[in-house]
Length: 226
Image (cartoon, rainbow, N blue to C red; front, top):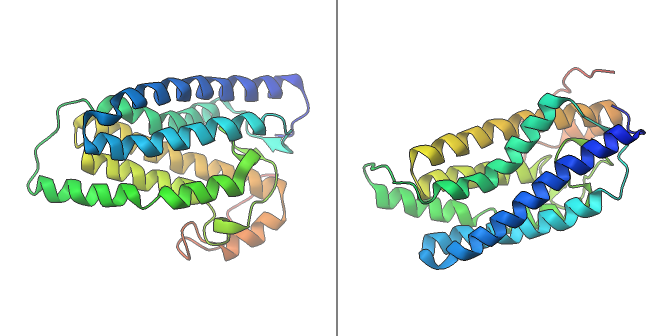
């Protein structure tokens, strides 16, 4: 949907404002929980760092007017779910944990997984800068840095974090929240790709030569709605 009226601008400001306020609350709450245990410290540091960077780049992105934007209500709900999911799992950390065989080994693997995305998320955010948005917006085709190797490194990293959260804090609410977040991320990813394919013809070439993660899921262009 082409941007150009105040309705679309209000939509952008409302959605980004909601997320920004929520991220501020999460940062404050996470700081209060940091030193409960080493697992909370391991989980909390990236949440604080990424949330602060998100706030900064989201604010900067509002200054730029995108070439097109997906303002469907369903897309707004999906985008908020994908974004809030990363922060809402903080509520689940305090829930009673389920018992599984080899629990300690599972949690240790989860700690290792949680460390892996740190540099890649930072790299991706520094490549995106003010192209970071909540709902899918088409500003430009970002194909440099880590985006030469992955079409959606942030989504991949957030999915890895969601899996790591389940392994470190295996509660029923954590499983439901993290799995829900993964589903929202995948749906939002597909809608963002559709918007970019509709807006930028050169995105098709990028789509074909760059996988979702490395060479995985690299293939033919899906149908384009024009």
